[in-house]
Image (cartoon, rainbow, N blue to C red; front, side, top):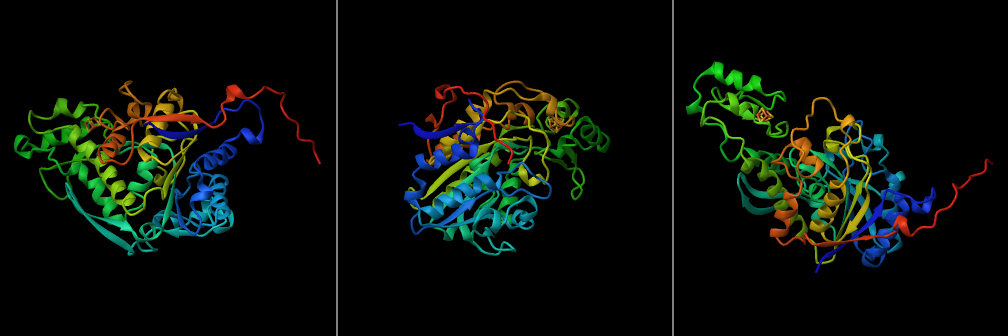
Length: 387
Ligand code: SF4
C-alpha cells in the first residue's frame, strides 16, 4: 500500500496568511496526528541549524509551530543538531526564545556522548550514534531540502544520516567513497602525467596526494564526473566509477537504519521544507541564490516516501540556471535537476532505493495536498489598514 505524504504547496490562490506555508504545516501536523502521539514523550526535533552566515535553513516560524504542537499534546520538546552547528545557532535566529524550547547538541558539546552500533560497511565497523537522539522516545525529523555535493541532495535521509552521528562516523561515511580503489599508480609512474591529469580538471577535484607520492586523490564532492581527466590518464590508471560515488548514499541509508532502529514503531515522523533550495548543504555556512522555485512543505511517517515525493515534485521544476554559481557547470540534462549539477553518479534517488532495500519505507506513496489551490475561491487582494 502506498504511504501517505502530506503536502502543502508554496503556491497560494489568495494572499492570505492561512494559505501560507506555516499555516499548511499546521494542517500537515493535524493530518499526522502529531499532538495525539506525543503525550509524555521526550521529543527530539532534529533540524539542520546551518552554520556561520546561512539564512536559508528552516525558519524558526516553522519550528515554533512544531514545538507548540508537541507542547499542546503533552510532550517535552527540544530542538537538536550536531554541536558544530548548534554552537552559534542563535546568530541565525535559533534560540530557546524563538523556538519556545531548549536547543541541545545531539551528542553533547564535544560529541563525547554516543552509543556504538556495530554494522560493518566498507571502512566502517561501527556507527557512533548521538546519545541524546538515542535517549529520546520520539523524534521529529525536520529537514530543509537543498542540493548536496556528495549525494546530489539533502533532505530527510541526510538530516538523520549525518546529523545523528558523531564527527568520527560522519567523517568515516565520507571516507567510504575512497574505499574501492580508483587510482592505479602502477599504470602511471610519470610525475608529469600526473600533473597533467590534475590540470585537466576544471574543478580541482583530482590532485596529487600530499602524503603518498605517486598517488592521486579524488575529491568526490567536487567531481561532477565530466570525464576530462580520463582523456589524459594512461589506460588503467584511473577509474571514475559509480561504486565510489554510490558508497556515500548507501552509508546514509545504513546510518538511518541504525537511527530508526532505536525508536519504537510509530515514534518517528518526518517533515521537509522545500524552499530556498541552494546547490550545496546548509553546513557550508552561507546561503547562495535558490536554484529551484520554492516547492512547499511535506510530512510523512515514511522516510523513503517523503524523500521520493520531494524529489518527484522538485524534479518537475525548472532549474534556475541564471542563479547557478559560475563554478558549477551543467553537463547532463537527464534526471533530477540536482543531478544536472552534481553529476550522473550522484543521482539523488539512490538513497531512497537503498533505504527501501533496508526496509525503511516504501518508494510508493500517495501525495495528499492539504490545501489545493484549485479548490480555493479567488478573491481580491486583502487590505491591512494602517493603525
Ligand atoms: S571527472 Fe571531471 S570533475 Fe571529476 S575529477 Fe575528472 S575532470 Fe574533474
